[in-house]
Image (tube, rainbow, N blue to C red; front, side, top):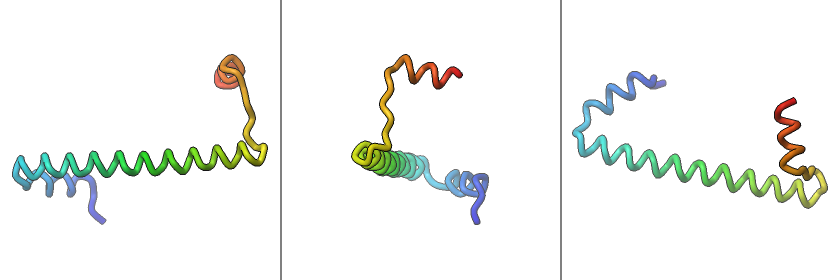
Length: 68
């Protein structure tokens, strides 16, 4: 398994242009993964709402739960 330090060392051997391309590619992939995760979470929330498992709360109620 490649460690973080090994990955950095390998990346540093690339040209600056290749490092920039790699960063942009990685940013796009991270954004795609975040979107995919959000889609799953929204689908789960919608399913919970359909089945009555979703509990509604006012902002004040949420703050009381968070602060307690």
